[in-house]
Length: 111
Image: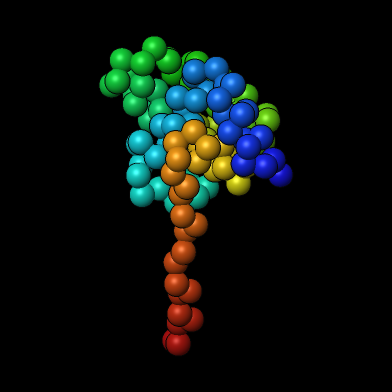
């Protein structure tokens, strides 16, 4: 795993579309838990609403490239889910770390 300094240097060197996508996760869903994903369409609409010139096709391709480098898992061909490494990169860019999902165990039915 990279050090915090290495990750920050990598994040600072990313082209804008990748930084924008990663920064969008806590902007779109501030209460998002670690590993929870966003649809490509959601990301594209986020940029359209803010007049940031990243179209759907660019977002989709950038997310695919992030997945190739191990930062995302693409699920059902439309959802970008950050991996542990992706969560670290999001944190390096946004300054916010998504908490782990913690749900209580479901009780065993007694019937």
